[in-house]
Image (cartoon, rainbow, N blue to C red):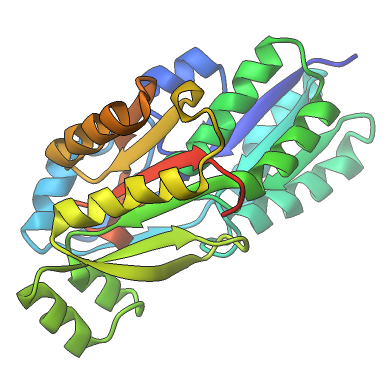
Length: 291
């Protein structure tokens, strides 16, 4: 059986430490701020997260670019030529063209290396929801699962992985076309926070509204109570946040108090997804009966 490498893109929002621990290859998307193009790498070498979110809070805008076909080809070719296969788990195709770029790159490399295998999977996930799937996949690879069985496992689990988000800054939803200007103004004045999730197609969808951030965060935890796979205390739960450590601690406290959940892996939302969510966003990820 040929050895294989797990590959993903930087929208997984795994930290540099988690990437090293998992042994995965991360291909960076790019973001542009103040006219400068930067790579969204796990170590955030081009711009620290502290500097990034400081600028976001100051009103500086950031735009993003997907991974190109050429970037994937350049990353995949030496791996395949070394005799290894690739399992590539990508950001939701409903939110980015990165998955399509990986598919095209894999098809191109099949002609060059017909004996090599490149399996590309649409995670239908975002941020550390994608990262959670990659993290579990890396764990199962270390346990000895082969590439075909692991690909089947990822496809099977993706529809049962719940993604629940709330955002602090409604203006970022307005800029992204997910909220009209009037609703953004009224919602800001009344401290209304949307409760959103990634649906079965990987699209970010508003579900309900809450008054204030603590109520919104509580609603995310309520969704785990409603949908989560039992026993909840045995789950490894992932959290993403856009420079919101107090919200992280609040949610962690609720998870421990209500369900006995203690294995919580929290991490920052990187600059690419942060460009669309703004500062203060928090997401909760767990396995459930359905999305």
